[in-house]
Length: 394
Image (cartoon, rainbow, N blue to C red; front, side, top):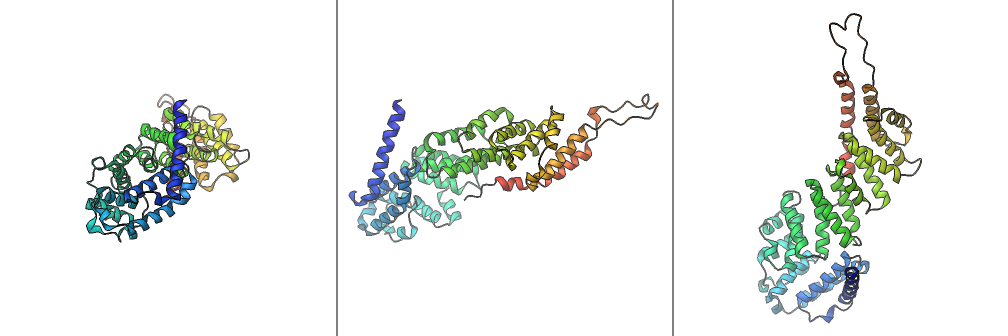
């Protein structure tokens, strides 16, 4: 009881401090590092769902930039102020402002300064080269967490394991901040692609505990969905209950969409237990006489017809209103029905007297080549599944 109350009080204080930082930026002594701290307070409010802070922080960045340019050149010899410039850049600061500062008087690691400038100006290859060898835990945590977050973005495609390591650093160096919130959003997709379900679950629950009200929460759930559906994480029926628990945290419409994507992926990849579980969940979430309801029946019926409820599953498939199914689902439906029918084809009778020479074929010897080829053709047409679930955000 004490912890939730304490957290609520801290959030109230944070919101008040953020408001003060924006309303009265001149209240500080004017040292650049103090101005940047006020910016970080406002941005941490954004991570906790403060929409007013989100609306004001761009103006605050502009005001701080103006104060940087007007500052006495002598202030930049203070290492704290040099570090503040790097943090300012990586927090959304304007590079054109930083280029006006007296670089020769600035007391800051050249790799950090130049690497941060290259990153915000879009010179990604140069930024990677400058920042790759910097170990975030060996520099002050306020700057280290920001640098680690940027490293996670820079190496996400080329060196995913390094990116994950750096995003872990960002979370550990700046817990409870917008940096940690952003690190969780970026890391969830990488961990999904690595198919590490335990860590995927851990990161999701951490986000729910601390940042479910973040202004950027929708971005997290989009990345979560992509990480879940572009991998095999959701296709193991032994962990389906844990998947269900995670999906309970998102809105009903998104949950329904995800269950349908999981069911379809399960059918295409032959994970019929998952197809059935996801199809049944989709049925409980979909409305009568909708395309979503027909698709849910399709996936559940297919999983039944191809496993232990042949008659009921085939009847469910035949009762579908095909006109409500997306065009991309029709080839898969046709192939599934054909495969189900082929499995139950009667064994051809043998000519009289042939029994002594050759035993009748057993179910194990049934030739399913034609139905398998049909299913393969249908699967070939399902390439858009990857496009359907692809994360298109930067």
